[in-house]
Image (cartoon, rainbow, N blue to C red; front, side):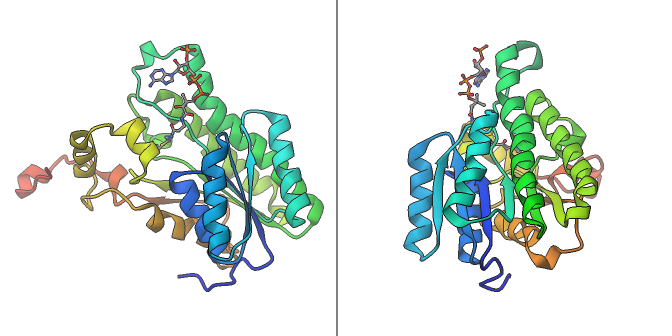
Length: 268
Ligand code: HXC
């Protein structure tokens, strides 16, 4: 969709870029000309994403980072500057999730997910935003949320609360940093066919089929069809879009099924 070279001379940071949707978004930004710094906790998947990018002629730097640690996040931005000279795009994709009853969630479990999703998004946005402000040439920040940010999500109280925070953070920064030409947006993928999401949210084939059946379009998303919109929102083609969320979920969150049986329609 976007022409090659859209991100020429740009530098992007993708958190959680070692696997799943993060890896696909990193590959896509690199394909479109960006140098990409890939952040995540585990070294091997980061190195593998970097290898895939370089194999295709792109520029990449893997930077082991726990986004909950302010010093590590500062080091991440410093690494991008040292290696590629600047920061133009930040994709806040790192997430943690598991399905748990609220009454059974330990304080540590709450802190782990809220720490990665909400603290991590704040810390990365702050560090990258500071650099973008200093550069004086604008920038784009994109965060990955989920529709339970506004509907609530039984079994995911930590993630739902954190993603709601990220949406509020996005709208806040969009206004605060507009004067610096920094656009701040979200994408909201529905159930996306990645290993990490599968393990956390639909561990069996049966669970997977059940989740797919709740999507009006009748299937999970591929990471590629989500990544294309992530890149578009970070590109100059979205130059007048800020503080916005783009939901890419096959109609998932709108599905209430209330009167479908009366229409003789039933998914399953
Ligand atoms: C209950 C759990 C648990 C589980 C961990 N904990 N897993 N509690 N059920 N399945 C608790 C632990 O017992 C511990 O609390 C606390 O959480 C911290 O666990 P750690 O393993 O020490 O934490 P950490 O290493 O920081 O790992 C964070 C994590 C992990 C969130 C727990 O799963 C992770 O990093 N996942 C990243 C990958 C991931 O989840 N990707 C899926 C994202 S998909 P105690 O009290 O015992 O010390 C996604 C899509 C949503 O978000 C969109 C849907 C539409």
